[in-house]
Amino acid sequence: MKKDGNSLSKKLSLSGILLALTVITLFVESIAPTNRLSLYALSSFFIAVVIIEAGVKAAWSFYFASCILSFIIVQSKIELIPYAVFFGVYGIIKLYIEKINNIVIEYLLKLLFFNLVAILSFLMLKELILPGFRLPLPWWIVLLAAEAAFIVYDYVYSLAIGFYLNRLKKILKI
Image 1 (cartoon, rainbow, N blue to C red):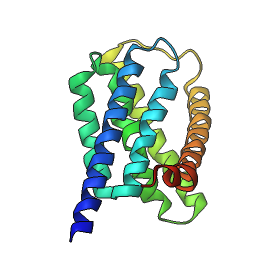
Image 2: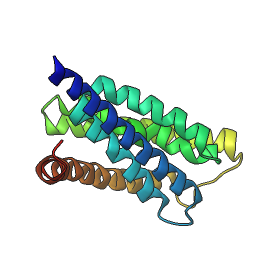
Image 3: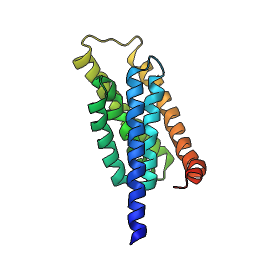
């Protein structure tokens, strides 16, 4: 019985530390003059560790807690939208999709998710935040470039998970 309590304590404390790191990363993103996209990506990797160590239910709680806490702490709320609609939840979506075990279907579903988020975000930006906003290039070129960047992000995300499992987890003794 004591082992289960220690295990739960470990999961909670690890989740709390990762939650703090996520909020700190998002706070730095909101004040950083450059490299904002890389900070969003970094903030998204923490949920993968929560999934590995505590499970998907804990990851959903982590996601909602990180959104709420970030919206309380970070001054510029608009800076948190990319995290709330994409980066924060992507690790969980990736987990569900990769359970299919068919790489073609997985990438089609991942691209579908990305395109839905991208299109909805663009429409929200154009209609609510910056009325009259125009893309500097034709929309399909922008979307293709964004999809290519997303594929790289997904690959790097997988590498980060592998790095955690094969190296960091052993060092941290989690």
